[in-house]
Image (cartoon, rainbow, N blue to C red; front, top):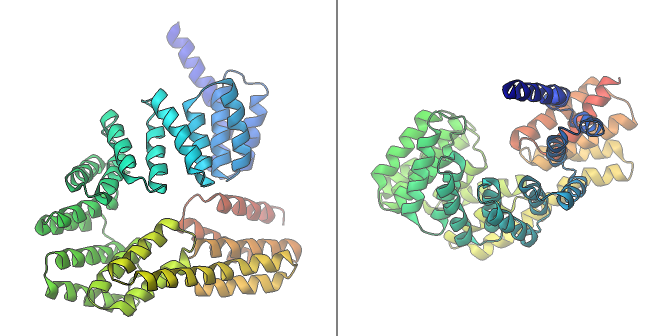
Length: 419
């Protein structure tokens, strides 16, 4: 009898969420939220799960103020760890680190088995620059749950930053071992382990790890990044000839436009080129990354660190700020023109911005936005619709699941359906 009741409950819940999940699969998040609201008026049995789903959907779509109101109402009625974690995510998005830290510390203390609170707290502490505290939080979390690929990798990253090389190496090895047959397997753990081994004066072990990485992640972009890290390993072991040889090989690949490294790959290459006195090419790479990521605080800090290590701290700081300001002006010009009703000029401005910063996610989203606004105000053409869609898909490839991508794609799909 108990089994029959449990099965009935499971079936009822599955049926209640079927339409919602279907809307989510179709990326129609507005419909999914509306369906949650509809069911909440009558389905009291599943109210808690419906509210949690609704809050997750509001976070996905970037409706943080609306999500905050729902979460605060929930928390006045019940002290739910997931609701506190969701509220902390909103505070993090708003850069209110102190409030997020307070909330997460309270949640982790009263619900130590709720590991998401520990992970978010470590993330908050890192954003605040409290790396020692972040390391302590992650160490406690891996004691509670040692079999998380991502958590072990994150512990390795933080331990490496504060100079706990043995701890970093152990965490990276654990992450690699756990992720061997997992979809969560990450190249970052291999790179982390290679760097930890190199810093610990074990270059042969570091090169061996990079060899394993090449086998597991066999793409041209990854091989280029591996080459850059390998070059730095030879530099740290005072093998100037091998270091220069690898740097030359990378420069040839870049000059031939044969491989386009991602942001992390570009930074690794820039580090290597700085130590081989190819500073002009290193600075060119760093300029491109600043242009394409002017709002990415973590990346800009990494760029500043590369300049510092090259003895160019002051020059680098000025360069970063100048390029960042220029990029922000170019990024926002089209949106400003739209607000003045200058639609064609806005589209042209964003096309120019895209030509200058093709890997800038905000530029791609703004280009799609001004095109969608233009075709809503003027007239649609298949070419413009496709240009907006291509721009959105390129933005999503750079940073999957951005709330603005979801909203703009929904607007484009709705517009396309009605024409």
